[in-house]
Length: 206
Image (cartoon, rainbow, N blue to C red; front, side, top):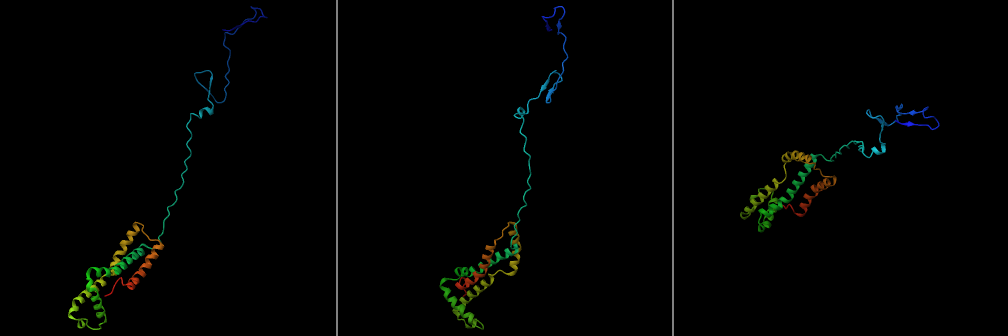
């Protein structure tokens, strides 16, 4: 209780008793939080203080469309590539096969005599045995064996046909395809190597 006395007034005339509670008015400020149990409103903390305790917002995720894969189209069919590879292999066998036969099957001391016999046999128009001497018959047998070996060297059409398709599928599976430069070089080798071999006697003729 609060008692206020005024000097100018008589003590018994005026006595202000403030023991009774006065009427209170609440003035709400925007942003304040009022608690149900408390009489006074609770003020909310400023935003600049809250931002230090709040997690930072995650940036928006933008998904970029994946680029379409680049598909390289070979300039040659796989069948053509397989046929070219087989042609190179066939040319190499025909080129180096005779030299291999010569080094493995003909003795060095008989090579010159065998070459002379080969020229004699090729010049005969009629039966060959009628112009041969008895000591030339063993060499003639060697010559016939060599001729049969040469005939068996080139790859037959049926053999090529059996190998082209599987080789083409194998090349397609592993994406093995020569570039234009390599393809041109291989084609040039197919044309030049057999002719150069004949010129320098690589595939010698008896």
